[in-house]
Length: 190
Image (cartoon, rainbow, N blue to C red; front, top):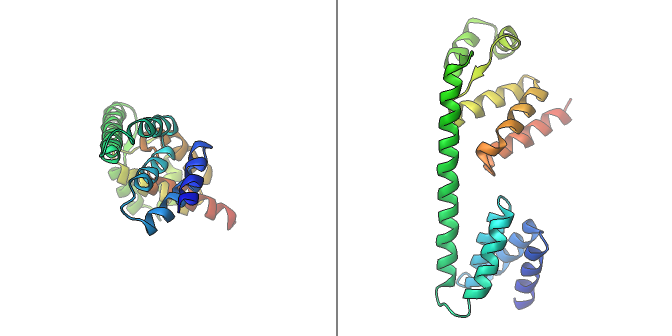
């Protein structure tokens, strides 16, 4: 166990966060109460999204773990605070984007869905507007639905452009990352 814990720590310090997460997870599976493994899992997961913050917290944990009985709780609270702050920032950015979109030329996604019903489907409706009008997306749900339709209807480069342009808004959101995988799978099946 100590060797696996040490290996996980070395993987983390070396920047191999996926491998560190796996190793810390194996230690935690065998020793569910081991604080160092819990912190390792939390920080490895955070590092996949925010490497600098995770490394800073890792260094801080190394300093406080010998002097504090609840060092793992302190780190957990700090990570929770980081996620909460990022969530609020994403919310503010998305709200700002939503307000800006309302003032620019475009068709709301709800109106676009009605247009799809009046045509022979998504492809035809999108081809009607793709060069003259923007589709205004005001929620993550609309974004996910729209990009999924782009992928399904073989508008791969446009789907990729939407994903790449909105990546900062969603961070390491697993649902959004799954769209990249779906896009890659659809491109490979052509």
